[in-house]
Image 1: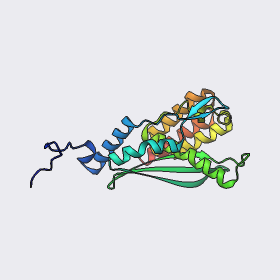
Image 2 (image 1 turned 90 degrees about the vertical axis):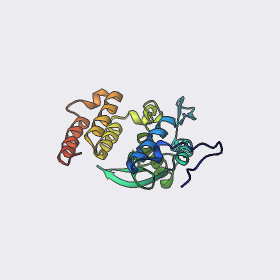
Image 3 (image 1 turned 90 degrees about the horizontal axis):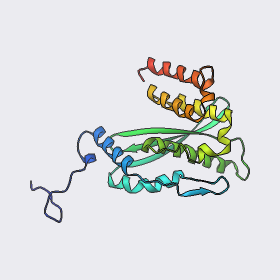
Image 4 (image 1 turned 120 degrees about the horizontal axis):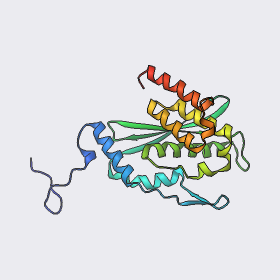
Length: 213
């Protein structure tokens, strides 16, 4: 069989995501996207005086790279109760048709927010959760993004609730440690050994060790 050639007469370059096992190809595509994705903070909160990126900003930036690597990204939402509060759990499903990688993000739905009806409130919460899932998938650092500088995020009860949601959503001990380190860097006083976050880290870590996570 004659080897396929491009317009210059030379064989086309084989990209890393085009060879190997399905898992190897998927990982190669993800590494390429993580290395080349440029999703700048293109939005500005004039009241708070900071720039930020949205879920839509990330999706717009990643679509050309998905096409280039022949991969797909599907977002999926679920509503769950943690304690007495409602959370939106968003899954980001990255696939090459033969294998997939899934990351998740959580955002708490407020009871009410001025100027928003119920549908708008859930939609805004979904957008936050999806952004967190995309951040995890594509290795985007939002440590200084709007979610960390918004005033409502500095409320201790809110931070603790968010931390617990992420801890119990973790599927490996390393993920649990990563969540703990993130919140400890944000507010060390909330992560002491007598606090809820630290106790949840220990409890979830023990659960995952038992099941080999």
